[in-house]
Image (cartoon, rainbow, N blue to C red; front, side, top):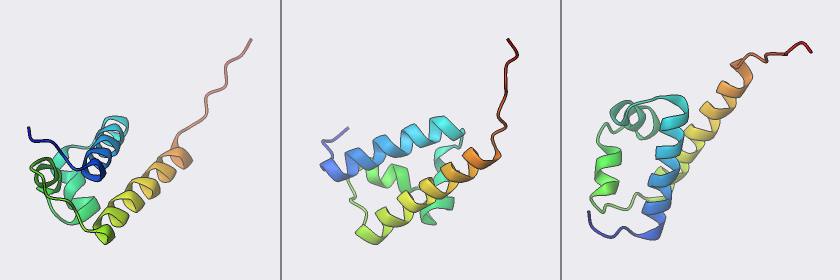
Length: 79
C-alpha cells in the first residue's frame, strides 16, 4: 500500500473505526456516505477526497452515530 496523505489516512482510520462500531461493509458505507461504492478503495489507492466530500462523509458518520445512541436501549442492572 502506498503512503497516504495524512488527511486521507485519518479519514480512513475514522471510517474503519465507524464501520467496526456499526457493522457496515465497505461498499454500503461508500454508497450511503459518499454516493460511491468504491469510495474507500479509491481513498486507499491515494485519491484525496475533496473537502465537501470529506465533510459529507463525516456528517454521515456523526448523524448515524447519534441515531444509534438514541435507539440503543439502556440496561439497568439490579444490585
